[in-house]
Length: 200
Image (spheres, rainbow, N blue to C red):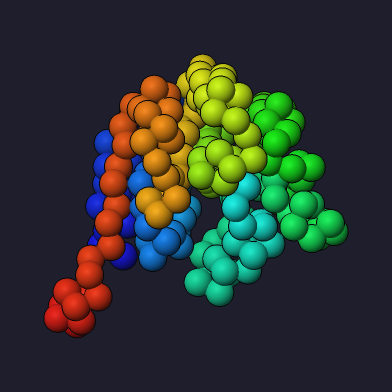
C-alpha cells in the first residue's frame, strides 16, 4: 500500500474543486481505489461517486467487500453493466446508464447525486474509471467536451474529481486531454517484482 498512501498524501494536499488524473498500471488498481475510499474520502468526510465504464459496479463492490472496505458512502454511476450482461442487479448504491456512449446521461446522473449530497450538506469526490474505456466508446472531441463540462461543473460545487488512466492502454492523445482539464497528473508505477521480494 506504500504507493497508494503516497498518492493519498498528494491528494490530501489538493484544495477543494481540484481535478486530478492518476496514471497507474493494473497492479495498483485496487490499492488506489481502496486508498480513495478508506483514507482520502474518510479523512475529508466525502461521499464517493464512482463512474465506471470499465468494470461492473457489482464486481467492484464485491471485491471491496472482500477487502473489508466500508462502501456505505460509495455511489455508482454504472455505464458498463447493461452492455456487458443485459441484466443488472437492483441496488440503492447504483444508478445505471445504458452505455459508455451516453455521456450526457452520465453527467445528469452525477448532477443528481451532487444535488442530493448538497441537500444533505455533504461534499464529494467523483472518480472516473476510466478515461481509456470512455475513449474506446467515444470520439476524442466528444470525450474532451464531456470532461471539460463535467470537471468545470464539479468545480463550481467544490467537488474533487479523480480520473483514472491505465498506463497500458493510454496514448499521448489521452494524456494531452487530461492535461487540459486536470490540475495535476500523478504517476503511480508499481515496483518490479524482484524489488518487492527483496523488501519482504
